[in-house]
Length: 142
Image (tube, rainbow, N blue to C red; front, side, top):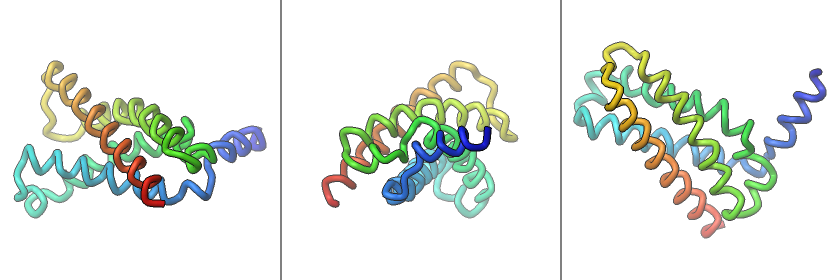
């Protein structure tokens, strides 16, 4: 059993994709932080940094689960933007759903289901565009 799990992850994690992983985390953290600040003002960075950190963390938990499984860091992803961008977007959609689900249970979140759907839609779109642009730029520069 351990060998089949090891080979599964070995096919989806390639050391050449490490720069993509670092960039993805930086981009996602920056976008999520920007979203928190745009809704709460810059004062939230000093008055409630735990809220900012938890919000970023719940989305990165979803990303950490789905990015390796879907292959965002596979050998193919490290070869070209044509492969890397769709893999990132396919990873982001379920990661975002998990992130929104976890965020919903953070203290002080609203219970408006329409607002939650809008929030999920916006975060899926913004994250997908952010990851796509970042990965496209990476392959243009390297």
